[in-house]
Image (tube, rainbow, N blue to C red; front, top):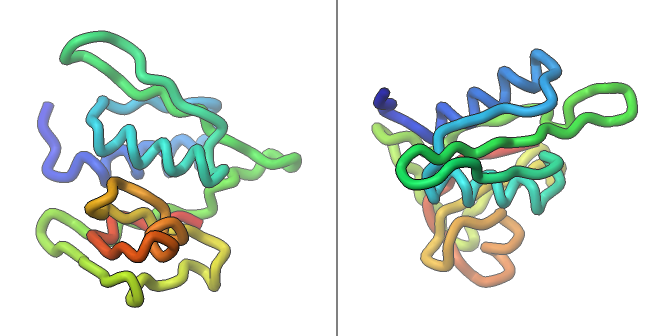
Length: 132
């Protein structure tokens, strides 16, 4: 199976699983997807993740996080840069998400990281998605 935008696919899977109040969701593995999920875990939007399988048939198992009232921690996910329209920002042009309550995930020369890490390291790059 082939997708035109695999990053949007994993974000949609997370969004749909949150809406259905699932404990976990699985997506096909790629290094970029794994790095995006790693940033989500570091920022506290998901509980954890694991890479399952070997060889070319790996999947990422993402464990979702809910608050005390069983509401999802992730309020929203938005794909910003798309294959058809790439969005690049400089270190001083990284926009805030929900007045600082959310996080932008960027692909920089130093790897995939959250916006506050990119600002701290003085890096700009491709604005992949926003999470709040």
